[in-house]
Length: 294
Ligand code: C5P
Image (cartoon, rainbow, N blue to C red):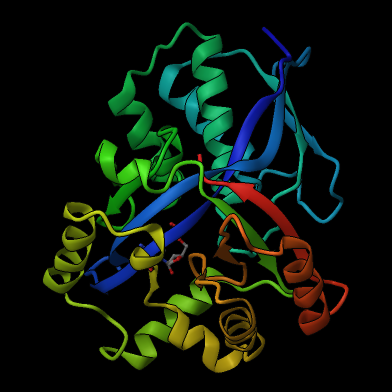
């Protein structure tokens, strides 16, 4: 087994339409999601005890069986009958409670590493089903570029190449305030406000198709149907997006259910000044980093 560090990227939702509630309690969505060049690293080492264990350089991240990395490893062992254990070392950079898919990405990095180590007993379809069983945002991380995600997140397809080319390589500024947001809470607010912030599936697909078929830039794709309910409680989020638009003419959106957001940078954007302004508005606890869409 190799202890080569595996890159575990963050994601952003450039387009996120929640189209309605399902009978299983989850929501159907149509989303364009892209991995970033920014993320965590995961190292997988042999475990002498034959168990699955992990450590993380961020003490705020739980390393017990509640961590999705260990749940992924246990699920992989159950699916393959594998008996070898592993020790995972996670170097955390992706903030948690951010809507950046950090935990989901880590879980898929673990799944891929274990599958590779075992000589790939799980083909793509079974790996995707296993990923979906771990979390709605997991399957997308089996792809290495921008995707369209449907269903509750389990139906994933690569974005057509010409559309992906309008996203790949775009520089963004990623930012998160000092607080995080619980995804179940945000979906709960969508239910409480229903049907106000659901976008009909036909309308979501029409908007997406219009962007895919044309040659409009990434800016024209940006949409997040969860912003309204999250903004109503966390006023600092829309306030910052207003500042970025008014003072720097930047298009920005929340990612997933927040609290992180991102702004699309242009060649002439004074990134240092924008970063300083975010820290001024949100305070020193704000996380800010530049990244690229992969
Ligand atoms: O799938 P995951 O465990 O990441 O989802 C966390 C929570 O987010 C779910 O319990 C549900 O409340 C909500 N959710 C949803 N519809 C989705 C994804 C997540 O309602 N498509």
